[in-house]
Image (cartoon, rainbow over all chains, first blue to last red):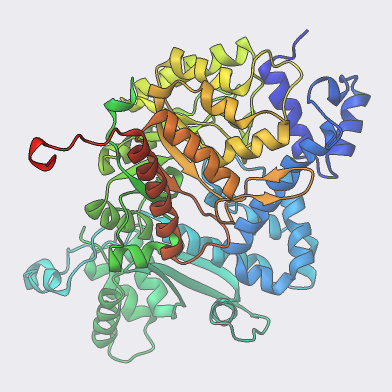
Length: 270
Length: 290
């Protein structure tokens, strides 16, 4: 009796994704009383049925591993090829791809690394992967026009206190425990990298002219940007800056910050 | 649906990230671009900006890799909505995807897996293509994939299967000449027979690409120049089907754009040379008979 389409595809899926290869996947199926593979997939004198399924198993793993290598170059540089390969093997078991785009395959890698033994040798690795994943997400994130300085200049002075700013919808602020930005920059620029230092830090990841940038935020910057994110008025943002700024002149600090956000194309018209 | 329902776009290239700047800055002489739909089904950023720029200067077609038209899973409605929206925005000459399944049980293998050539699979795929065409508000093209396995339950050949699907679902065919060659080697069938069996008026587009030779099998890697045997098959197709839009695909070890454009020109030259042979020479006018 012919095998039903769903049954066939489910069997092939299990064999292709079997962690120890098609042969072991087949052994497990036989224990469950499954039919012999060569009654389902045709083999010949050049390639057995198992060898043919194995071609797909290899393509599945290597295609996704290579896509992850591209999205996580610094994580790869720190872990090395062999560790990265093993990491992906385990990761795909726990987080098999479910989305149509291969660019989504790495969306849980940082989370997976937080529980992974590889953290013992590189305790900053999950934060590094978080930053790399955020860079991918920001690169693909939604479009919005950048606010022009003239738009702000046109606002009447009496309207400034109640004015609300808006951060570009593709930007992200990450809360990390390790200072990993310099490590990622070194890898991206092809320089030797050093392990990241421990230290709580907020990192801004944003897009300007279709390119992704990232930087550690100063304390005053964090407070102000978080206030912008939660929809605070300009007057409330100024209060936050006044509380956090090390600068004795909070107005000057606010002006510098605003100029920086505008030149970074970080704001978008509300 | 017939080929003349679609424009003849000429000889183009599959748009790849490595060539974005070159294409935008130099507007190379090439007839059209095929873009991978999923690369542009994103919220925003560089990819969409590039596609705006390319579309302003060239016709495009959208080619997908994740429709999973043969999967036993329900169709992914969210995917289809995104694809439809992308098509509304960029107005491609057509949308294509592969005659395959890419996952099951809500999981995606990110690969193009073959179907058994059975009545069950045929009915399943035909019904789904009709649903997709309704959702996308246009006919689609389906592409034959390279395959490395075939199924004991198949009751027909691949060419019979794809022809029956195209006829019954009333869709077009994107004929990948290299995939025919690769699968013919891997499953020991006659590639010429495949070409000869295609419903001519449904063949709307060709893919031309290179593959790698692994001894016991050929792998569709798109990382080599088009092999002579594949050009020979293309000539056969060109003779049989007439003017059909074609693109060159190159996905790994991607050369400079000029190499891809040269390959597209070669496809044009082969078609033109062949059609010149087929076209009767115009009779000399009376004035020139002296």
